[in-house]
Image (tube, rainbow, N blue to C red; front, side, top):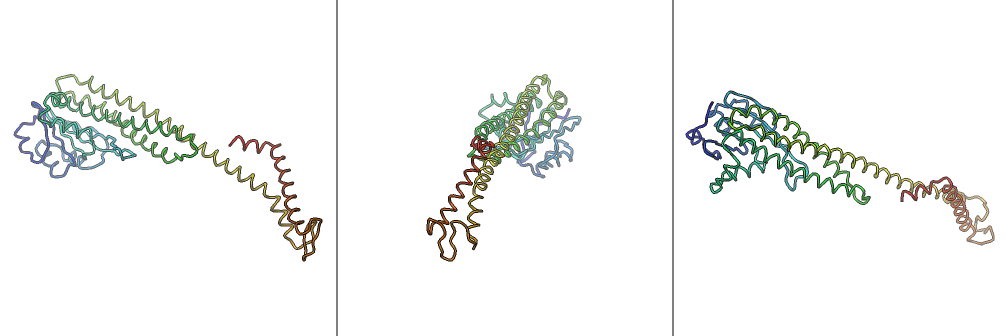
Length: 334
């Protein structure tokens, strides 16, 4: 089995690596063609795998070779100011006594773990995280990244609880927030489900790089992923309920507004019609033509006739609508 020697590492310039006994971890942030070609030529990595590392989005996969395994994983990343998680690609080469990771530097837990192992004053922590085999180190990396998934999920659930309170508040519009949260849930689900399948298949191929049985370690990672998936499924169902509830309440609010406007418009019809008649140049009871006062109330006869007639017809309509139950239904909406 091909092993990396110290002299091999010393020939690699401008590359960050950390060493624990015979195990070497090379971490490449923002990989360039120069760096990846240097790694590929030295350790005989396939040129197609090198191209995959330089690409920002490749489908998750596992490529098996005699002396190493190449893996591409997708993981969600998100910061405090990032409403919707981004999908970040992690490329990994696993050999007998080495592990090479290549990513865009936005996997904060991985970067922090590498810096922690790189700290010369923290040898015990380095030994605990890296172990003695590349398979164990891979498990630690996956465990740290999946734990970060749980943190992202907790933030998502917190946002879900906030929306629950806002959905039933008529003064707050939450349609946009619901749409953003649905997109966030969908993005994470689209990443986590293939991640579980890939890790499940990976255990078989990684075992040959470790004398210790790694089944229990990788099963623990898969258990955490199962919890994430279950929580995501529950969150997906919940946000769909909130979406339907918000739509129903918004529709009810719209119907309430339309009902009020319709009633107001309908009740104004008698006044409109009567005033239109009295605006004509014809002789009507209580009217006034060519300055000749008609009626007992003098110059106010027309005005009073219009007002009394309009109020009378409007009250008749109000009592009729109430008898039909229309106005009672409007009061229930309020």
